[in-house]
Image 1 (tube, protein in one colour):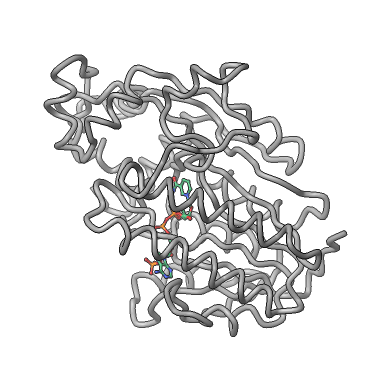
Image 2 (spheres, rainbow, N blue to C red):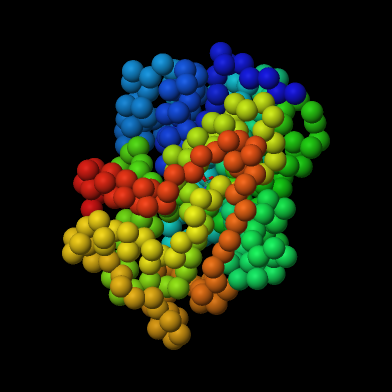
Length: 350
Ligand SMILES: NC(=O)c1ccc[n+]([C@@H]2O[C@H](COP(=O)([O-])OP(=O)(O)OC[C@H]3O[C@@H](n4cnc5c(N)ncnc54)[C@H](OP(=O)(O)O)[C@@H]3O)[C@@H](O)[C@H]2O)c1
């Protein structure tokens, strides 16, 4: 069985990301040496927040350049690592112009590249893969077919394809490939994290993650004319990051883990923000229905097909395995929203 060596470095791919930067912060606080990969050293916006996280922390951070699309890039950063946490992936907001190029290729070539390097690196004994709820189900309506009325780790997305939800399709193929490669050998084991939509304060001011874009939409008045009738499973980015650290360091950890704290309607976010900041933002006060939703959804990058299969349905999840297997502690959704609002205001992002 996997036995943790606290002196061995931990590799975190996609180090500059919204989730990865919290993972790195927690690992450094625990004294680990972290090897982080970024796409470009030249981009100060990506590097400086990571340097700030590392400053004064008990652990050490070493950065490497690596691209998911370049074969062999992960070999050097993986040297000597016992644990690999693979978070890197495009996570784009709105409609993707070229799904194959922008989403499918980086996700599928990325998982192959990283796992082929794992195969060639004898020190690696555990891989933690940031998958998604996107691999658990395709559309919220499917919850009606679940025998117990909620999604569990036993569920898989079997409906997405390259034309319908290319991101969900690619993540599903990638996670299946990871399980297949893990099952074909016995030197390293695989632990998968399947998060819902992550919100909460960021450790940088970049806005590329679809999560951050979604949240900023409320404060920037994107939904001033109302919100679609959509509900999502949410998780705080800090709880999610800690789940990765627990997955990396708990010897007995195994399998898939749904990471969702609470399910909320988009309007709940508006309500929490309105109560905390009366009249400060142009927040939505109505939920679209009928033909209005079909008329307005394309302005938010939402397709009619998506609307048909998701609006009005309320998803439900069993998150008990994340608590039992990893010991995840979830914080209240309201704290997540209010603390993210404080961060984006403090950092002048709205
Ligand atoms: N945020 C959520 O709500 C959520 C929910 C479920 C699953 N996830 C998963 O969590 C992971 C991280 O998401 P996030 O929200 O932290 O997104 P993010 O902030 O956009 O981070 C993604 C990271 O992946 C890197 N990346 C993208 N394309 C790359 C490429 N071709 N080569 C190398 N690196 C590349 C990015 O590098 P650059 O900085 O160079 O762009 C960035 O560091 C993803 O796997 C996503 O699928 C996220």
